[in-house]
Amino acid sequence: MFHTMSQGVKLVLVFCIVVTVVGCTSTTVPQSSPTQKPTGQIAPTVPQPPPTQKPAGQIANPASTDPWAYCAAVGTIDTPDGRYTGAKLPDSIIQGMVQQGIVAADAPKEFQQNAVWRCMDNSVWVCHFGANLPCQEKADTAQVPTAGMEDHCKTNPTADSIPAAVTGRATVYEWGCKDGKPQVIKQVFKSDSQGYLADFWYKLSLTPAATPTQNATEGWPTYTNDQAGFSLQYPPGWSQAGLPAQNNGALQGVALQGTEGVIELYWGVGFGGGCPEGYQTIKAAQGELPTCYTKNDNGTERWEQISKDLGKIGFSARAYTNNSTPASREAILQAISTLTFR
Image 1 (cartoon, rainbow, N blue to C red):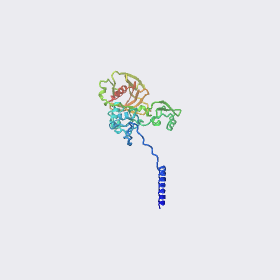
Image 2: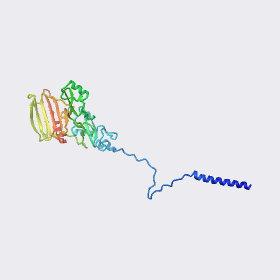
Image 3: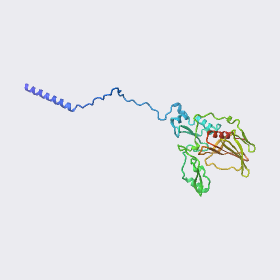
């Protein structure tokens, strides 16, 4: 019996030794030692979601209703996005257009509002549609004639110019017909850095000043034409000179000129001419008058065919600046704004 128990004890001991050895070699997974923090290192914390960040160019709520602050923040954008929350065309834009002579202060509200604005180079730029100006079209610089131009020149093989209704109002060129084929006559417009027609877009002042009053021309000399029945004030220091008669004396004129520019006034019969660029309007004392407007490459401006039917005779004026300064532009527009008919 003792022998039997001794054998049992041996088996138990052997079993325990085997289990211990196997367990140590097969179930124990080596564990890496804990990472030691360098002296002074702060223990890591549980990652937290980052605070909400404003997108690049985001502006504070008070500025999001102000076009000037908005453009200063976003830089350049063709159409104001969701970061601008103000009126589609705020009064400040309209006031700026009035101040810079783009629209008349007494024009109907719906006419004044017929404009669009955008941001370019951190500034506010505006275009007034006026007589169907292509404000929202990119400049067409193609020199390949369209099918419409081809058809027009087949019918009008020697036409000096092709109407804008045929060429499209966004073309930068004046087109004509030669031997029944369309051809570029000259470039009349240029495009800005965003591809829009630069001649129709104006940079508005940072803070629109008060609308000019009629007293701005107080004390200016007045040219009065009793024969045709009109008058116009012009800046002090300007001179007056008669222009050569045309159409065998049926068309007469006078020039008012100074440092800022020239205004030529004509009356009689025999007026003519087209406006490939499309007509705009300009403010006179008794309302808007049509005009053919052009801005030259050097920044000078021209307003031609400022016309009105006076009954038995007609009236037409043209004005242009001698330089590109805002003061010259303002002098011309203020003078034209005093043009009065009996």
